[in-house]
Length: 322
Image (cartoon, rainbow, N blue to C red; front, side, top):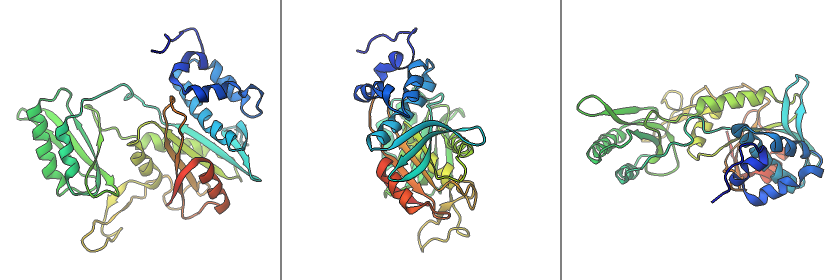
């Protein structure tokens, strides 16, 4: 068991039991490292848990870049008076990195017991990601009713369709929503909470917009969004690229296949925000040192090829063009 948290302690001392010990030891030695000592001091004095985790995510990124040989500067001011999280110099190139963490909001401590009956839905041969929620403490008979109704619905559903299932008295027992395509042949389930689906698209879009306002003008800028729930990548892609939609007129498909494309509501839609050409998403846990970003490269305008390769090598586990 970890030690009881000292309410009077700040930062690293107060939250150390939540952190990876090897990374924590490296961070504690940043006092003599140019570009990292200020971040260390911020971590030491920060007493608010949410803000501390924001800073810790930045420390995870900084540790990875520093160990790769990058020269870093933190909180670099722009001409507009805003700040970039990092200026990165490596291999003769300079670029600016904006790290934004998607916190758990009001969902962090909710836990549900998942009925094995729901696994039946994962055998339905439709290549969709489906969010499902159900009432807490649902009786087995009503769970079976939800699964039967959901199975019938999913056989014919399209992206964006939603079904609410109610009992004989009209009370809701659960709901499902088809949120997007995926590469598998059968349904992939994403679990929601009893009081609603967790759709983080709007929050992620606000973070992207905030990062864009902090861009260093006439320079190369990269945005990295960090979360801790793997399902949130679906919402990240919707915020960045646009919501999934099925429209035969806009996205003609092959014979016998759904015409799936992106709506014009994404951060990168059309010619909007031309200075943003490279974004990343990764899932992290404070107790782990692992940080592998999935990178997204814009097609038009496209990022600099040399920069794309460098960022992929430093932060990524692969890249996707969009």
